[in-house]
Image 1 (cartoon, rainbow, N blue to C red):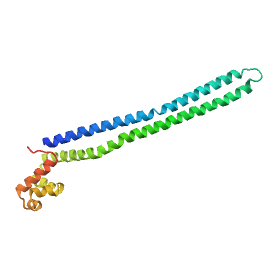
Image 2: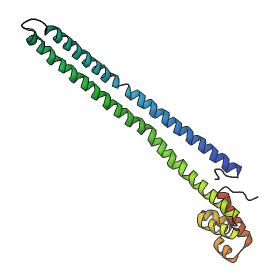
Image 3: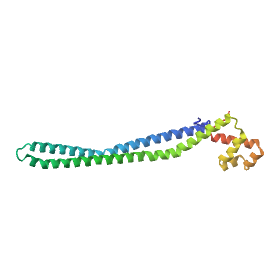
Image 4: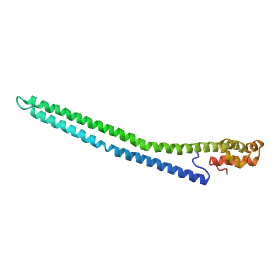
Length: 200
């Protein structure tokens, strides 16, 4: 697999872009984690509410249990406290719901803040890099298998920009058909340079 160009200037650009892309991805992940941590702190209110509800239920249950031991009127006095204990359950349940909602929001925001920049970086950086690696690796293998200048020149005519081809020769296609060796060699060199291969 050929990851980088044989040409120094192109290789420096590739390495620089790779480093910048990886730094941007790392920063995006760090930002997403920070957003998740910040938003998830809002769940503390829900935890406090859940604890308060559980404590209230426990207190009401204890009071009800003690009063139920009072002779003759115990069961009647303890009933309101048992009912009040269920309000503590409701409060605890509301606290848990708030925590769940905050956690969901924190997760969505964290992934969104990290994911969007990473997606953009991957589209702008990774796809062109993969195209380069694929073309360079395939071309190097074809050269070892005997790919000649004529086919390289033809690939240049189909892959390279028209303006760049015109700089080689205004009628580059005609020159290729005629077998003009100078034009064919220059077109082949252009194609090899675009895939980062220097023929030694």
